[in-house]
Amino acid sequence: MQIEISIINQKNEIVLSSSGVDEVVLATKKYTFQAGDKFKVVTAEKQLVYVQLDNAMGSSLVYLSKGEWVYEIPMTEKLREVYPPAAFLDEKHYFFVRKAFAEEQTSYRNWALNPHDQKDVDNVYPHAYANVETRNDATFFARNAIDGILANGDHGSYPYQSWGINQQKDAEITIDFGREVELDKLGLVLRADFPHDSYWKQVTIAFSDGSEEIFATRDVVETQYFTFSPRTVTTATLKQLVKAEDESPFPALTQIELFGYQKLLN
Image 1 (cartoon, one colour):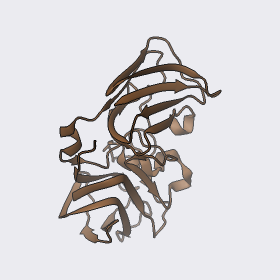
Image 2 (cartoon, one colour):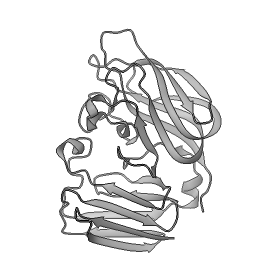
Image 3 (cartoon, one colour):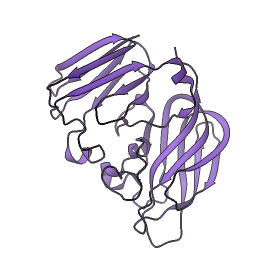
Image 4 (tube, helix red, strand yellow):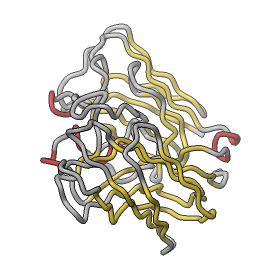
């Protein structure tokens, strides 16, 4: 499978580019990202790929549903608050994209994990979105809940970003996988910046097949895991979040994990 990765500037000019079969590396010793820069990843077909778009960020296993991905490089101070301080700032860079191996595609894993998710993207998965995000502030975006960062003893900027619900009682967050996956386990990390924070004592997870599960949650720091009968779905929505009866009005979600399998892609 042919893969191409490019850096494109604000004028839509290609700054750097590289291509390869099944894997591609793009590296440079001297380039400083500018406002408006973006990555463009193109594959010959819709595919599951491993990608790393910055030295300071972990790799992601992402599904490209249209064979193309445009990643807007976060350069504004507000957007950068949820990334490691060095992300995208060095002059030396290493970027990597490769087709996922068959064993990676079919292994048991957290299919919700995607450190490269962004708020306004619609063809790269997994993708998180919600019906509310506190003050439209990047430190409370839905994408923070699938970035793999589990630190929950504070709130605000990196490494304590979370999904904030702005005290909205009907708050919901959805993880869209972009294709069918078979799930059987949920992991939740509730934000635990006590006494600033509250917590949810009960949550409902609803799936695209129409099924739902209700789980009791606690005010603990560690990840809370819940198992359920396997089901093949394309989305999962955390909703009907029942807040504990305490003085704080601020429950929030640090991380959601959804474990299972997917079928082998071509």
